[in-house]
Length: 368
Image 1: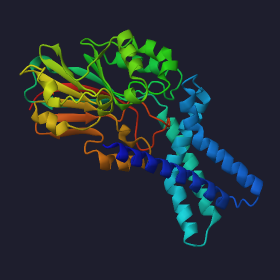
Image 2: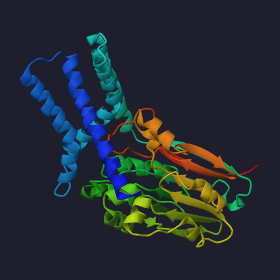
Image 3: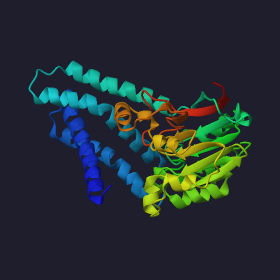
Image 4: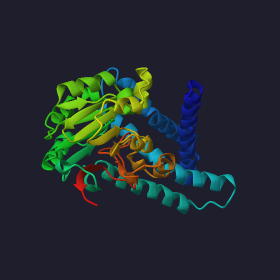
């Protein structure tokens, strides 16, 4: 993507963001019939501050971490996302001059608040274990019943309930996995201020080890912090390489394109697979649910991805499903599979609506 297109994309996003705040201001004035100039100014300042709170928090990270501001700005982003569709309906209704019923406005605001409460409660929950059995006719007998815990999108440094990492590690440990694979976005902005999360990850264990690749947020937040985390824990980083796990299994890992562009490393999947042997079961780790069909044609048996969060919040789920063919769940192409997880946790707003935090336990089976 050219620099001009990137600039245009971010300007478009910023424009929608500003317009959403304008809609909220106009609709609140309309719903509550606000006539006082002073009250209008107060509401405008409050909405403007709320809209800027995310950027203020991001700037503050260079010096310290404001936990309250992080939580507030994250929830506000969720409020904007949830309310945008509803408030634009009110705005259009008023714009075209149709008779306005205040009851409809109050009902809309009440509905958004209820959905927010449900979404926050859902977003802060620990991930549910999702058991997925995948059957292969030619699976090596030694891998029959092999258990893989697939972790993705932990976003350490974003809003989490107290003790979240400790509880997550306990859940993973109870599954007694043969292998733990992490498909990116392990850390996020603010992760450098939360050392206890790193120490908890040291407790992760699996018979054949723990392996991780980068996601886009490793680039956005602090790539050097990600490297330090993998050095201080039992997590092995796979960067554009193929690693032999045992006599029957190999894992390929490819960096996210954001990081490859930053490092000026234009490695291709064809180059990575040359480092693998000609036989054995092959798992491809790639943060985004892309390249699957190409990977299958190159001999990959299973791809694990994340990134999409299954939309996380309505109505983003519709956008995600339109952008990514393999946006969420288990898909098959020829004799191979891809599993795209909704992620262990959330990004931005600690909220989920029509999606869940999940911890996939993938069990390989030999059969017809």
